[in-house]
Amino acid sequence: MTEIKKPLPPFTRETAEQKIQAAEDGWNGKDPIKVSMAYTADSQWRNRNQFVNGREEIQKFLANKWNEELDYKLKKEYWAHTDNRIAVRFEYEYRDKTGQWWRAYGNENWEFNENGLMKNRFASINDLAIDESERRL
View 1 (tube, one colour):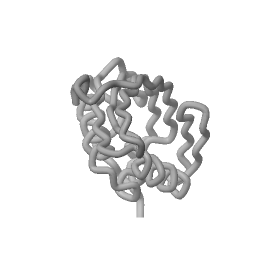
View 2 (cartoon, rainbow, N blue to C red):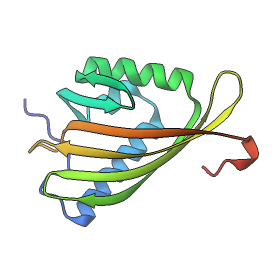
View 3 (cartoon, helix red, strand yellow):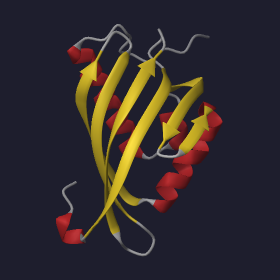
View 4 (cartoon, helix red, strand yellow):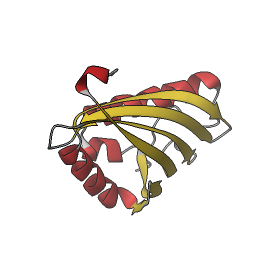
């Protein structure tokens, strides 16, 4: 059975924004298995200095991420798109197990297959320690 994840490319501004909102909602749901289903079975990621390949590694990566990044909250924004690619800017906040709050900023470049599954995700991310009173999300 063919996997399909709408909206499908080629993207318009409207459908690119729908894809971004779906990604934001999924990541904020913090379900590694559900989130991994938005990616191709052989999806390739670069996340900071880590390289993640395929759904099984994505699931492990996300489970570990949300085990370490407590009270995680993400916001994504449209940056640009072409037929099958979307660029986003994002920020997210979390606290670590010591109680320190962090804000992470970054950009992602996404490439989708014809069925709307993400086959490539390249993320550049910077972290900033913040006080709890500085939280925005």
